[in-house]
Length: 103
Image 1 (cartoon, rainbow, N blue to C red):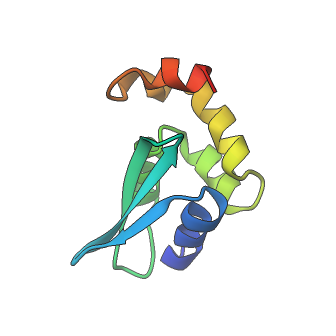
Image 2 (cartoon, rainbow, N blue to C red):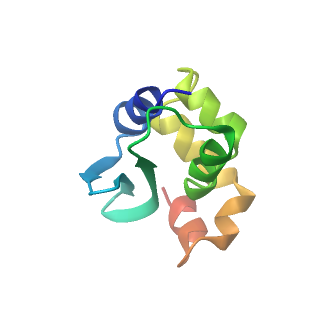
Image 3 (cartoon, rainbow, N blue to C red):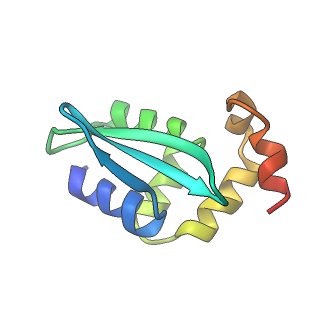
């Protein structure tokens, strides 16, 4: 998958903040002043399946769910619903599950 396609979905659909680094670009998903998830994209032009899975895990969703976001099926609100139901959120730092259930 092309890096620009994934980047566009992360920035435009999810509304993640973007910070350029020397080797990669970091993205932060913030809701009500709290950082919920972070991920990064390397400078390479294409993203393989392994890296795509890593990005999905860092966003606390599955690869098929991230593919739905990239393919225009879901946007920020859909991502929030995915997060609320995600079993991957159990490994998140802090009490994100409790925070998200209050939204």
